[in-house]
Amino acid sequence: MPGGAERVLRRRIGSVKNTKKITRAMELIAATRVTRARQRANAARPYAEQLTSVIENLAAGGADIDHPLLRQVENPHTVAFVVCAGDRGLAGPYNSAVIRSAEREIQAHRADGGDYKIISVGRKVKDYFTFRGFEIERSFTGFTDNPTYEDARRVARVVRDLFDNGRVDQVELIYTEFVSLGTQRPVVRRFLPLESTETISEAGGGEASALAGFSFEPSPEGVLEDLLPQYVEARLFAALLEAAASEHANRQRAMKAATENAEELITKLARDMNRARQASITTEIMEIVSGAEALEEDAA
Image (cartoon, rainbow, N blue to C red; front, top):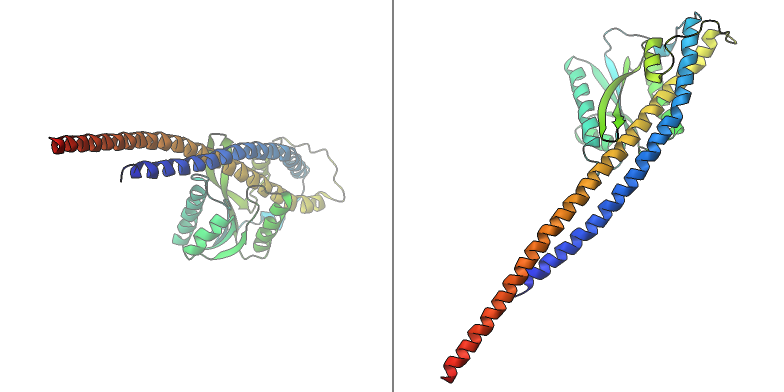
């Protein structure tokens, strides 16, 4: 039927244009959110640095660092993996990269004869490991794109309970580190036990040299007892902010690529529609000429 292909292509072009509007809007939203996420991460950094500095001063002042969070176990058998990804998709390789890194770590530990526990942060992590038959110890969802300190505290409380009660010997934190707007990479970091104040300094960004002349009340050990749990929460919060910024950056790039692909597809479909229109016009002209020739033959 003349014009049938043209109508189909016209409908497809309209559909792709609507999709392009959606992806463009999502790209702009993600660009705004990644900026906010980086601002939040930068705003939280002074607290972590000050907390790190105080812990360093405690160590330099001769505090007896004997705390459950520093308990070292040789050849840990049960390891908890805190895996941070997103609640939603449409973020390019963001979710899959973190999940693959976590799965490699878990499978390697199982191959060595160890046991594991998974604390999932994000619906994508939960769905992936549940579908593949892994046991999920606890799952947290609903805040991955905009985490708060209270969210970090809830996750940290579960992790600390597992570690303090001896149910796990070690905790690994797996998330996406925000390097720049164009570069984010999944990382696996030791979370518990805290290895040393040197490790704390590297993670928190505090001064490497501590002042030993401070006086702590009621005692250095008592202050340390209160600060180490807060440090754990602050470190997890920083990781959640990094992951959120990485998610928005990946979504921005993915939606930008989708918008560009939509533009290319619209151009291609427009060319196909023009060819179909030309073919339809040519067919109609041929039918008219054939009809005119038939009439002339009849008249003759």
